[in-house]
Length: 112
Length: 113
Image 1 (tube, rainbow over the protein chains, first blue to last red):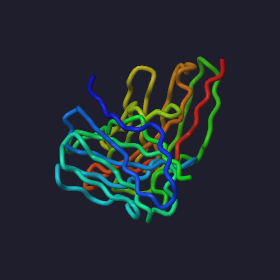
Image 2: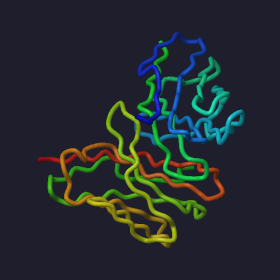
Image 3: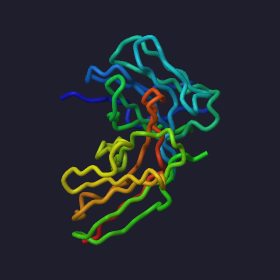
């Protein structure tokens, strides 16, 4: 089945450590996105990529980094510079220039 | 600056009745609107969308209405079923925004038997 796979589902890290969240899609979508969801809030865009080897900052990019070396993969690194990293992270993809975006099942990151 | 707002954090509806979820936006550049449904610990699932050239779009039990002058959209679910219990997000995009979506805070819908 085609879809978006995020791994792991739950992730725990010590404060001050960088952590990388995986996102893989086999939908042949050009565009990929990372969102963050906090309790009682909507999804906020962290980074997005419209094509391989290119990406743009979203609304809350500080403390995060991404790469897009392959069409299928868009990993997100939460760095130690991110002041409040505990959240639910969602990856999405879409056909270039079109909606809707299709979402993975998310990774819940907890900083101990 | 909350460009997309869902002012009702929660809504409770009896099974079989109509559920109406509301969403307001402030950015007049938004021209495409979507509704997503989300279960706990899962990603959002696309439900229905509407372009700004329309004022209504229907798909089975789900209908979305758009009032551009009021910058307001609503999602109607009729009849409501227990499986509809979830958090519903409205989202908006602007043609010039590189497919960026701006989401509301979500409304938790509970369908009571």
